[in-house]
Amino acid sequence: MTRKRTIIVAVAALLAGAATAAVAWFASPERLPWVARAAEPLWTETQWPFLTDQWGKGKAFRCSAADCGTEVSLYVRAKIGFCNCTTGVADDAELERLSDFDLVGNDVAALGDGRPISVAWMKGRSRAYGLPGKNRPGGAALSIAFNDRCDAIVATAVVGRDRPIAVEPAVIDFLNSKTVLRWAEVTLGL
Image (tube, rainbow, N blue to C red):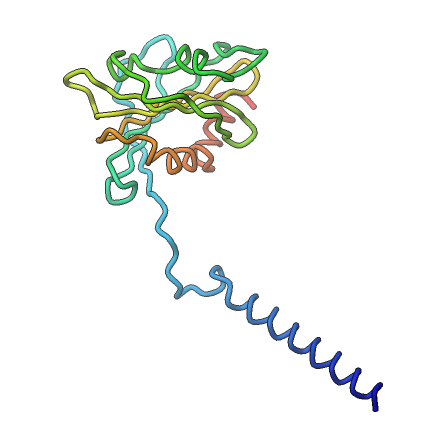
């Protein structure tokens, strides 16, 4: 009787485990189209609004307040051969040297220390800034730079309020998107 009971318990445990695995597999969100998913920010490409300078034109994107919590204008461009080839964008001084503050009027005030970030295979930094001057395109900005060897990609996100850190995850996610990464690969000649 003991052997029969052991077999019954083992079979019941296997069936329970298989049933649990089947329910988990079929109930996963990607298999249930009627399950609401968290809304992802929608970025729309716009016209590059700045005059051409030594770095040329870049890409411009916009995320509405409905999608990002506040209006965000994102400007991304490459600075070929301008990054520190040895250390990359390893500190706030290098980030500021690479930043496109001239796009937002050069009058910026750091709102804290920068943070390390990753965009695909590239490493860099992000830092929040206030835009205290008048006639600025927004109240605050994020400066983000990351590099592939000696080449840098620089992103400036201008936000309509004084809390740019709140939109940083959405901006970093978008910089990691296929749209931006394909552009970066082509621009950097990879």
